[in-house]
Amino acid sequence: MLSETKIPDSTPGIVMMYALSDEQALLARLRYNRLIDIFTAVTCYSLQNHLRTAVPNVG
Image 1 (cartoon, one colour):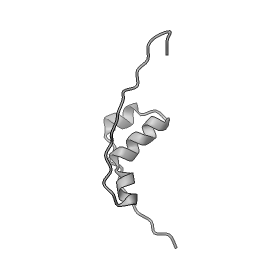
Image 2 (cartoon, one colour; image 1 turned 120 degrees about the vertical axis):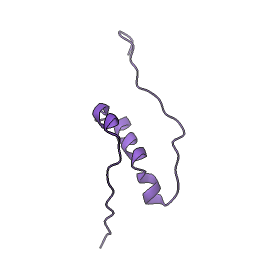
Image 3 (cartoon, helix red, strand yellow; image 1 turned 135 degrees about the horizontal axis):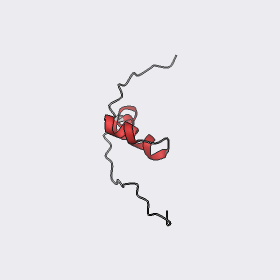
Image 4 (tube, one colour; image 1 turned 90 degrees about the vertical axis):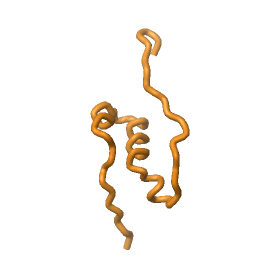
């Protein structure tokens, strides 16, 4: 008796191309598809973003 809400994937191709299978990729898809907004019926904004970087021999 649950309702199903179909949502097209609005994630940009460049993001999908470089997205890995980790929590940051999942959060990016949530943000681009506005899933939190849709299911809470409240407009949500991303307050902080960061880029993944690595330094050789450091991490």
